[in-house]
Image (cartoon, rainbow, N blue to C red; front, side):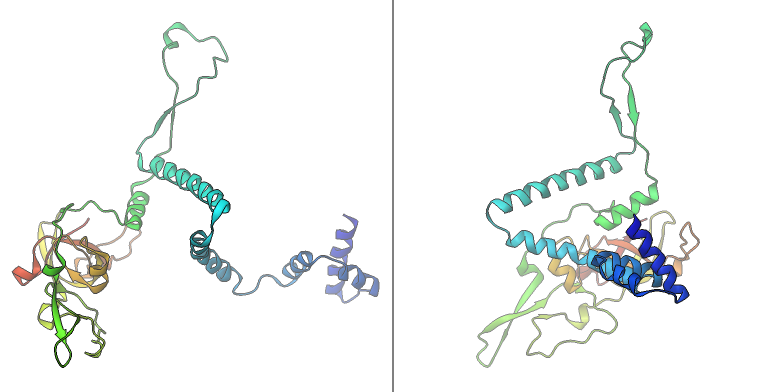
Length: 289
């Protein structure tokens, strides 16, 4: 305590510009972490301190995953056990949030006071707090779960999705694929050189707009597509921007004038494709409200 008082008095002296060699010697003996604390008290944090901390925390997930893949033997068992317990806790929490009103029986530790006869067989129930609907909706969107008009779709063959394009002087190369389905590419999309292009998206099957039905207004709008959020067939088709029946699209809803509870304009919303675009020549979708 005396030393800390001396250090504090030293910092006060430095502000006044009055400190002795004895004070300086005291500070030289301080451990490293106390030097850092003292510097922060005087000058505050680095300008990018909190941003660096956030990035460090974000990187930890990847570092942890890398470590889990490499670890072996008895240590791996211990790590796996700890991770299993963490996941179980996480699942319990998610389940508790999903339940609208979770009623749990309280453990009977015996009556503290005398209980009247008509309350003898009644169970005590603890009721958990109910999460607001907007929070739940945000969680569902993050997890990639929506209540969609078409919950299940028929699986597609790779032969149905792609056509093999033979290349080379003697047509022996069979590594190129022509996509037979409708696709979406962004505004600034440029094709790779033919030598390097593995997946060919024909110009005739590229779409920029979709006919979106608003289920509450019972009206159809022709809206620009922002991107392909999820194709139920495969993750690869999602990255390629392939649009088939059941695909979740992100569409620009600025024309509809939708507003959030906070008063902000909703620029983009998700919609599910309800038809077979390659057969109909247009994309019909239903807005997920």
